[in-house]
Amino acid sequence: MLKDIEHPLQKYIRPGTNYTTCPGCGNGILAQSTLRAIKNLELDFDNIVFVSGIGCAGWIPSPSFNTDVLHVTHGRAIAYATGVKLTNPKLKVVVFSGDGDLSAIGGNHFIHAARRNIDLTVICVNNRIYGMTSGQAAPTTPKNSKTTTTPYGNMENTFDLSDLAKSAGATFVARWTTYHARQLTKSIAKAIDKKGFSFIEAISQCPVHYGKVIGMRNDAPSMMKEFKSKSIHINKIDSLSNESSDDKIIVGELVNENEKAELTDLMQSLRTEVGTDG
Amino acid sequence: MIYIKKDMCKGCGLCIEFCPVNILKFSEDLNEKGVYPPEVTDINKCIECENCMIYCPDFAIFLEKGGVKNEK
Ligand SMILES: Cc1ncc(C[n+]2csc(CCOP(=O)(O)OP(=O)(O)O)c2C)c(N)n1
Ligand code: SF4
Ligand code: SF4
Ligand code: SF4
Ligand SMILES: [Mg+2]
Figure (cartoon, rainbow over the protein chains, first blue to last red):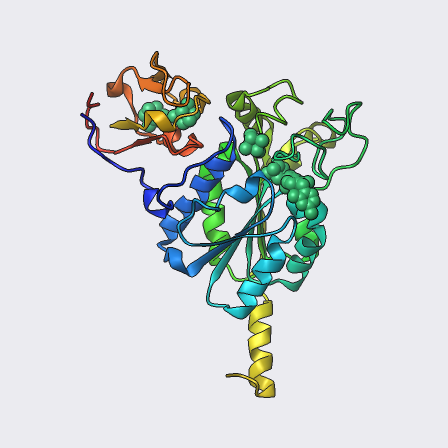
């Protein structure tokens, strides 16, 4: 008989819950990468609040992470997270958001949170599609991709979410894929540890609705092997001509600034200065 | 020692794909979900790299390090 031994991350999982994702979905890999980062940092789970929006990505922390989780309206996870952080700056606040949730309906919350440099960690699950609603094009869908809503190919340009976070003022930005689960764990730990707006773009597989678009229906292993072969580390990018880099996924820690003026700190100084503290 | 929570497995094959020493394969026992969970063919070849655990989206496979042989 097998000993009744538990998964090393089991203590973070709310009893009685499990992942209802489709087979091979990247979401569970990202759940593990995040929980392992928290384990490595030896953080008190009760001091972390997760906030997520609508879409499959929203179900990563909710209901399975056994701490406070706010599962809120579509696109508004960062707005709620801002409220949580300003109310109780001692909490670590981590947002999970899909690419549609974050950059379509929630696009303004995203860029303004980065601009304000509020101390949040935002993890975007970029599967380049609206997964939950069955595969409509998102602002992240590659050009020419045929999706449910772009049957002749997507004619729109694509947002580079990490670039957007960088230009808007984020303190820390990293992009990895689910193939880079270990690197993700390290970057997520840094992001949580670092004060200021931190953004993690996790390129992930939706084998059901994006897999079918690229000829890999229900084939998570092939999708992840493709992430591996298409990824190039930011430090090696100069050696590539522009032409060959088009199809590449640039991975690595793209921004890692020294900590700079952060919104909750500025608010606290203001309170002290004008005498409304306590 | 590799542990497989058979009924949590959704049969995606990621653990099998990313095992660097190819010691995982689909078993022939259907689980509660109606898929074939993996089984270990030769535990003595396991290098305890943790790939199977890290890449499993369903927390269904994990290991205890220390070279203990597989229990049945
Ligand atoms: C206000 C509002 N508009 C539209 C929807 C429908 N809807 C649900 S999830 C979703 C998009 C999900 O895509 P994404 O954020 O990329 O998450 P994924 O499912 O891919 O993880 C949409 C449009 C909604 N729930 N609420
Ligand atoms: S629809 Fe896609 S993103 Fe949603 S759970 Fe299924 S595989 Fe994952
Ligand atoms: S720990 Fe590594 S070598 Fe051992 S079974 Fe898992 S993937 Fe294979
Ligand atoms: S990775 Fe997990 S869910 Fe997928 S086949 Fe292996 S044990 Fe099953
Ligand atoms: Mg999506």
